[in-house]
Length: 211
Image (cartoon, rainbow, N blue to C red; front, side):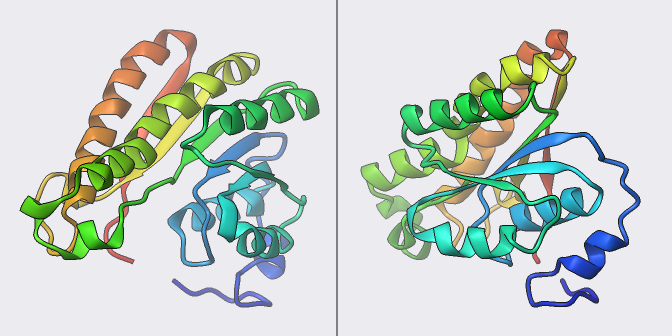
């Protein structure tokens, strides 16, 4: 994906051309790793339209996320968050609660599986690799939606968006345990939609296809 911007990450020129349709909206985007991340493409589009963003990073991705955040206006809030740790998730929502009167949307783009469990034979998937893939890629949506709920309700409801892939439904080479994790993610989204819908919170998954 390329566009006519002033730097490799895509930013200033695009931001100036936005229509401002998301002016006044506050959104949390989890899962940005680098400029190729779908989560980043979504964050950039929302920022272009005037949304105030909160971006999180996991450990080694801090430098990449901060560099990307610096290309957006208004400047995003950048916070650490390892979705395997409830305390870090709680800290993110506490910070959002202190800075804003709630938020309007959550983008869940967190996904991970050990390389050896993606490139090897599926029948040799490790127990730890399976646990880690399901925890990071699927359970984290439950944890984040639970933390987001009161802040979304404070704005009268909102939207939760997660990212899936066709590998949840069909076998793709070298996708393996991630396909199982994405299937679990999609089911998780349906149950969350049923659970949170009465509070005015929409939950959807999108499958963008290969990029």
